[in-house]
Image (cartoon, rainbow, N blue to C red; front, top):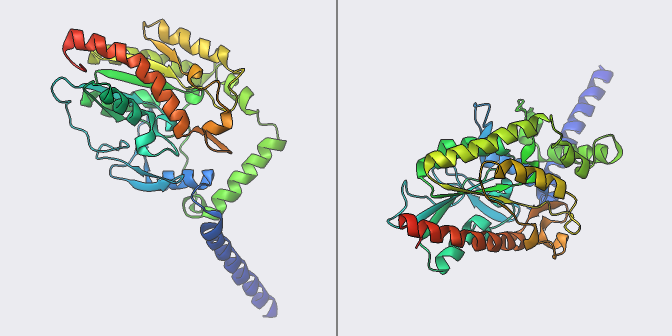
Length: 333
């Protein structure tokens, strides 16, 4: 009897400790800028599963969340930003911005995302343009293509801006059912993330440079899939009568010398063989201190400063594209 009572006390004490740990994590540890917690909130509050194997997940419509210190909202189509009409106005050139969390603007206010800044800068230059943001966190190139075809095509873009990042050659992740702790416990999310980081630091997991380079081995499944998807972007743009431009977003941890010029060259070759322009945005940031371009020191997603640099490079390239569109179709003038 006494032994059973002691077991009961241990169980109760353990539960109290776990509840206290959860409370402390949410009240003290969670300051709104902890990467793993913010990604957890993003998955819970903004993302929703999609049964299609080539998509996996998407944004829910009408979502609102505070992530990495900035407000994130989605419209009725699940796109970050305000509602957008089915058709652009008369003489308006419409730009679709396609990509992953970098295009979404992880940790960047909506007005500071390069998707927003490019449209704003072009409008200030006297051009008639609008645009929409198809960026979704954790997407690869196939998922980006699927969302463009599923949602973006119906909005009839005149220009498709594909922002390519080095991890876009990852295969589509597995979507195993999450356990109760993963779904509901902030403390467990932090603990698991820190344990994973520790194992990577002292275990056999490849470092980030080797990991990225491994994605581009000739027979890597993700790279083979990505090359096919890039061809799909070219054919989809032709079918829509849209101009496709691919902008390469550099990895911001090291910029000069840049460690992935060989990977950039591989991607350029695949894209240009379909007659699609490829613009490397490394020159827009390579003279800047890498840490000054990160959302936080442990999270090297491009911050607002980096987004502004990228937007300037994009705008400079797109102005002549709009000149051509103005002459041939009377749009974007």
